[in-house]
Amino acid sequence: MSIDPTPLENITWRTSLTCESAGCVGVARQGDFVIVRSTSNLEAPVSKFTLEEWGHFLAGVKQGDFDDLALERQEVTPRGSALRRPSRVELAAGRRNWPS
Image (cartoon, rainbow, N blue to C red; front, side):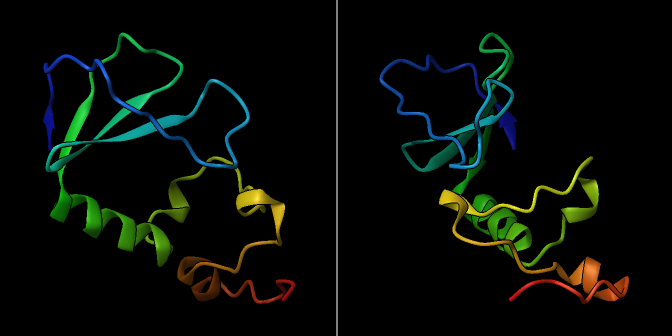
């Protein structure tokens, strides 16, 4: 990971479909890298990751490796289709009464 000083013109930023405020994480592709920034502070530094680094991070997110870092549990999924499944951290803690 590095902080990228490259100009950010012509970048198409994406946020989670669950993001409904300015306090989200923006993600974009820039060549062979994924760049990440705060949407609430557009002047803040941008972090730059290789595709391999980003792939490992996404795999960890999908399997719940970072769920314990959340301040609040948001039980929504993209487009509000259903409640999310428990993470392996929650399963290990014994929370098994999740809706199907």
